[in-house]
Image 1 (cartoon, rainbow, N blue to C red):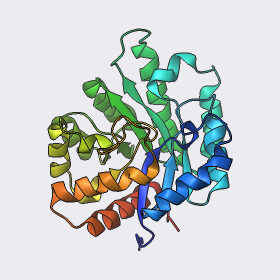
Image 2: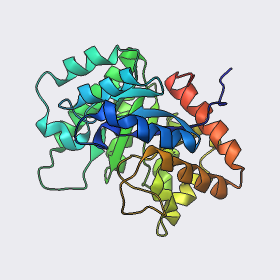
Image 3: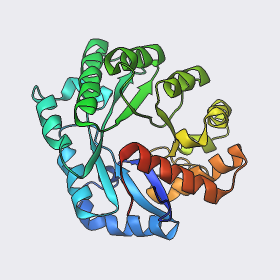
Image 4: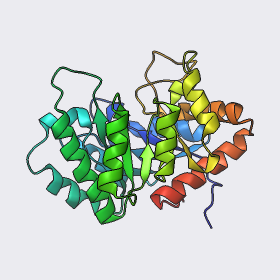
Amino acid sequence: MVSSSLGLVDSHCHLNYLFEKDHVAQLPAVLKRANDKGVHHFLCIAVDIARIDEVLSIAHAFKQVKASVGVHPCDVTKTPKDTMAILTEHAQSDEVVAIGETGLDYYHEEGLDKALQHTYFSQQIHLSMAVNKPLIVHTRSAREDTISILQAEGKYKARGVLHCFTETLEMAKAALDLGFYISFSGIITFKNAESIREVCKYCPMDRILVETDAPYLSPVPFRGKPNEPSYVHYVASSVAKIKNLSYEKVVSQTTENVQTLFGWPCD
């Protein structure tokens, strides 16, 4: 039986992006601020090959931190030819609990290579299934293709989470039908994010995660300033308000969801 007694989990953050260098040396203060707010575990997400060693070094240095390995869709044109071999090697690590972030992003037209994004997304889906570790999916302005590739390449067996969800209720329903989780970020606190709050209201609690995406997307009242993992409690509080649940229930359930999805006991 899973336990959520150890507090809230920031299920998606980029701890290596909080500082330009000396990440391991500077992170204790950040993690302590989070611990003081009841945030006790952190999933540090990789987005490219060039900085994957930073992510892994952080996970090795701090017991509270686990890592993912993957290539973001906006980075596929800059990645080396042996990318999948590198990801496959690192995916075996006990510190790695997920593959990604991967997915599709059609938002910026300049330099957009849809075919290459599709290739790397498909390959990372297959890696996820091969090592039995869930996907961290990024999707922006690519709703239909994201779902269709998950269906076709994942063969309804792939599992994971659509992180920092900003898409439609219809897409959320399609992802839930595939067995995926939905993760909400500080965007859920924004005044103009009523459609995202409606998605949250619809999603069952046993399929919801909370995240910061730090150092990006700080919640109200820190919007426009650098984000950090301690602020994930604002996201959890918003979920509690939207779902008409106690904050403690949201903490307990979202932590249980992290444990279930990633096989991470959070001890």
